[in-house]
Image 1 (cartoon, rainbow, N blue to C red):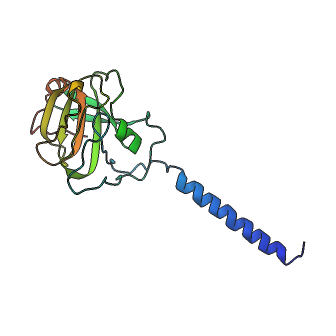
Image 2: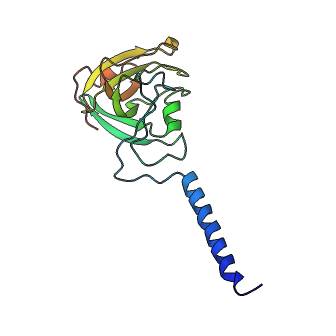
Image 3: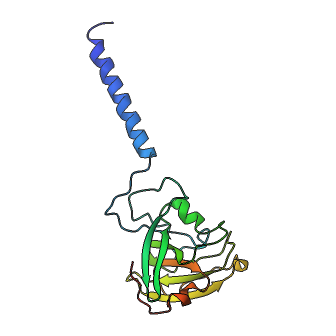
Length: 189
């Protein structure tokens, strides 16, 4: 091999390695950021029934994707009647699955679906095996409505909030009353 072609060969190899690293980094999920805000969610119990009219699926407000749809970040939600441990549906897989397919939900637990943009998001009970309360929450963490005791048998009926919302909290049926959650209740999370 000629001495002049060796630098060119090295340069070509460096370019190939850089391209491979770039492709791999674009394909691999990024790690969560400690300062990342809550992400959007586009589902109900198992999948989103509808988006606000004229809107496409909002992009995630966070800059990460969870590796597995079975691993959820949890937050504590302070309600008048106690603390609720809520799983956050943050990845698209989690948003699509929601609580669908589960046999039950632990007492004092729920799942929260944060949205990037306030809207009239529709939820349904596809693939659900137990009844739920849906708590409709505004961007200032105030409850704008509660739909209680929704049976899995209601699928494919779509449920909508009374006003534009930024979050939906799904709880076991009856837990909204048990935790003192009603319209105008201020939650903290």
